[in-house]
Image (spheres, rainbow, N blue to C red):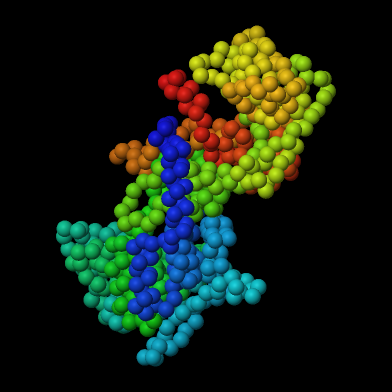
Length: 625
């Protein structure tokens, strides 16, 4: 299980991070990508900045995508531009409307209140229009709409599939220029003929087909005349190019499959490398920001744009290192496997690194954005510790989350000298970090619940919580002293604690000035809300589950204790009104969120978002080991 190396939330580091965060918020963000954008504006290469976030709708977005979202919208925000949301939906067999909807929801949630005014969408159903260039050639362009310009009309994300007709026409143009040909080799043959970095590739037997034959075959491919895999359209570049991606790459393949957005209109689909740069061009994108694995694809991105002699300014592709987080996987394929094999409860399971999972767990969008801003933009990949993300979640929630008292593993305490049937109310502060949050009334009675960990019949050294003969403070209530216990005769387990209270200490302070060494939280048994609370830990037991040894399976590193469900927790009654998604700090326990899916009116279910620092738990764990 993760040890102290994961929990890097000491006071020293917290103060250092807060200081750096304050300084960075005062200064304008700079990095190598922003320098490129600034130079392009200064030189006049572009007059305004248009970025895009182009996920493939074949899974839910994860924390790595959050970094890309924050970067693309952050650049647009800094330079007065805008950012398109586009579904790069060129593979019909793996894409689904469910993913489109979840992606749209996640993006809007993450940028809400920060850059939502920069989100460019398109009129629903709109496709690129055709205009003539100065040379009389067709040019396709699909401008987007900012929220201020929608005027109540229906809008939707951009779709690469909306450009299938322009892309097809661009492919025809490349054939006419002698820069593309129809190939009859199988996918396996094409892959083998590509060669390696050390050896040149082998040219296709069909590379010499005439323009007329290629046009005829490609049109028949579109008409559905050939079965899947029978033919492809390939670019004619250089089979001896040092960059393997330039060795006559496939542009189109035949796939008789219904598409989530275009239905059965098409049976040929463009490859990502062909569609990517041209989709950027059609939308008027100026800067295509990709993760580092696309760096080797950049020459191909540029080749397609240059080979077509396009009239408008070309977008440029630049790359940054993707985000890796410890104890986390970023592969959508592997995340899908977790869902399909029932290892998690769905894409939005709070243990998942998906944006929807983090939202359900209670992570604020502001904390995720602050985390992404803090880690910055790098040219080399590295792994960021999960503890850093948790730090930003704590920092955000500490400022905004109202406090409440909850007992997750209840132990009954009977205050023998408290009057039977009496009830009092105590004033409790809602958030000491925010005086404007005010106070609330918390009921108190003869029987209260405390945490099992807050009592030891035989206390170990340095234990200052409740034990026989020891006086402690019940937060905001009274000082109590343990006088005895009741045990289960079969197991010897303490099932009930008896105590007395000092009536003169109402509010928790002694008039004679005596001090106690511990303050513990409690819930009145007569007023308690009984509900389910789910405690989450990391999903994997190793720091790098993506890097399992050869022959191993990342599923072997799943943490069997990643979730603990506590069925009969006792919460202060005010929490019965918790709205789905509402976040709280359960005092001395951590930050919790009312589950948006499973909570019902008057019966919330809570997910633990992140723990608080617990010095005693670390001491006890260290002693046990």
